[in-house]
Image (tube, rainbow, N blue to C red):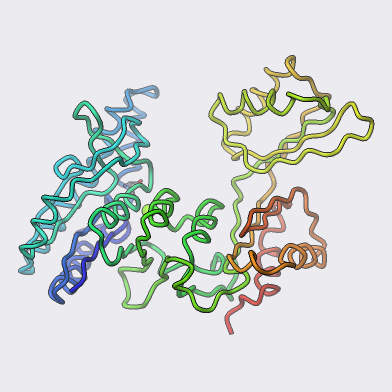
Length: 406
Ligand code: ASP
Ligand code: MG
């Protein structure tokens, strides 16, 4: 007997027939003698609609009331799934976030889970009853409903699995696993059997939107074994786990890309202490996330150029913030370029092997692709290139790192 948390995303519960399909899967696990808690998202498209209603009511609105509205999508699906399970003769009941309760902080719209009281759920599972839990929602101080940010039901599931000390957290989503790269672009992309938390985190943070980033952080912290799979076929997915559970470690496990990047170059900024703080301080105050940063050496000892990237959506705001702060630090010219893509190769194998960056640079050079910015971490090398080369770069790198399917 195992204790399992199963999580189903919006496409898996998109209509009643699909919810019935989910119920069949849950029934199978429950009848195999396992203790089962299920976490569900809202039906696909529903949360978007709810967000749109709120924005229509008022562009600037009370975040607590936003949560009261957008949390309702999940209440529909827990009730429907419990009904479908009961119809199939499986004992089940629904739980909202506040009934459990899932305690969060007061950051409405993007709340963080602080603790989960599992006593009621555990008592319910002991009697063989399936607990059907609303993802995405929690209870904030002051008895208010909170939500965890878009895609947050992944985090609900992992947090519940951690709190319940579950043997597994199965996340059923709209892809059937984690791939070496985007299969829509590279035909030879392969599904990975296993991937480490750290690699998954890097993949999630550079645009491979399989799991909410926060859910991966949480899985890593609490050693929750997460399986990513599809509810539409009986095929194995990808296990996200600790490094020591992976016997054969590849040098590079995956190649990710993010088109959501814009490059800003400040030409002729003073080369003296305090300038970087003068630039990035106002950006931080404006809640703009800066990703890659390069500063060149100064030739004349007086001025230098500074390049950094921000999310595409923040480009206009960034230009304004920088121009407003110009008097404080000064620069000659601001050059902005939204037509860039960040391509990253990721692999824990890099820690013990040199040469990954070189292979990457050579491969791109052979294709005549110019590298604009480079950044590295212990298990990742990222380059910024012109967006028109996205496909070419991904395919060439996938082959160069021997990731192509046989
Ligand atoms: N329903 C929420 C959303 O669409 C949470 C989730 O699906 O993970 O963002
Ligand atoms: Mg999702």
